Image (cartoon, rainbow, N blue to C red; front, side, top):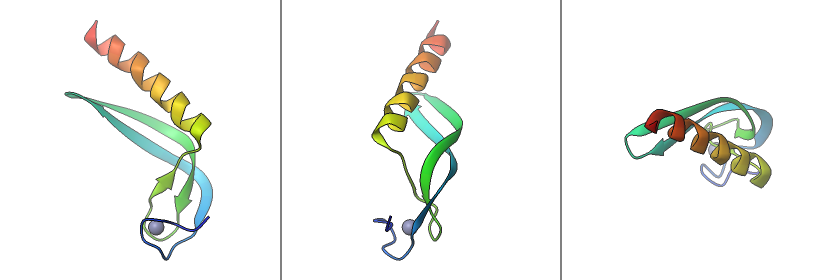
Length: 66
Ligand SMILES: [Zn+2]
């Protein structure tokens, strides 16, 4: 896949760290499968992975708020 951010790189399968911000809380999810740009490091998540990551983030935020 051609990177849409830097326009020059190509993406390759790999693992990345996703940081999501919810108000004052940052949720860090490691080793997320993604397509990662070899030039700029931008990552692209599939829809299934993205929704899974969002569900994990919701759980973490609830835990912090308890
Ligand atoms: Zn790129």
